[in-house]
Image (cartoon, rainbow, N blue to C red):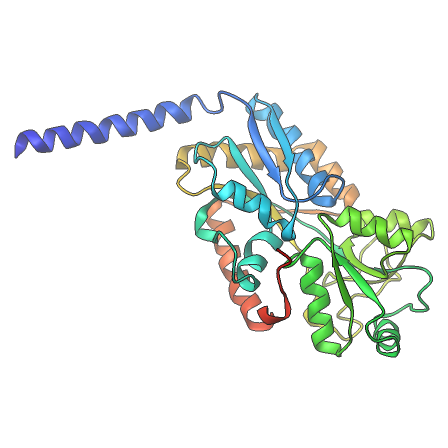
Length: 323
């Protein structure tokens, strides 16, 4: 019995030693960061900013791989199935984590399939229409949509994306009929709006404001709790009578489940240092992104709180995957 106990203890010690050795050498090769949206969107821009700075801190390249589709869930699923060795990470967002697990019954992963690393930022969104639409407020948009039932459309990054949830909530609240056109990323949908093939979008303000300044689209609302300093004359959704639509998505880093806690700690330290760097502060301030420093435990708590919140006002039956 004593001999068996000694063998078990020795095996456990070897496992611990191997884990420590692995984390001490980490990272020993390039890391892959999966951004679950098409190139050019705010997720891609933000992900590449963070990857570049973290690469310098970790002294290993972080290679961004865009894997868009189905509201960002295809990229998230790839990370959920990856080896838990710290070399495949997910640039996660509320759309392919808490929103997706709330509304998609056939999702092939759950939040339990990931190990949180840390938060990155919240992004301010705005509601924009093509200039040909004779609307300047949300009330006017709703009135126009009712008069042209089934003829107006909206772009999204896929089912369960932030934009999809926003418009389905708007449709439920105001009883309007808007046709859903999903794309593999927000940048594509915005381009389609500018081209006149899409009527309305809900997207990152940093992408919308330059186009609004050029008269290529019209911003009629911002989704934050307060007006944007860059758009002091554009009212919030709450000011226009829709406080339920005050949605500000977050972004963070996640690793596959069972990634060693020592590796998670290394990544979190590098992420916090990245967010505190002058370079990232300036870039985020310019784009209007709000930095969020968080431990893995704090990120986990935020997601659980958000899950409970979404369950109270999102009707999953209104969102159907386009698989």
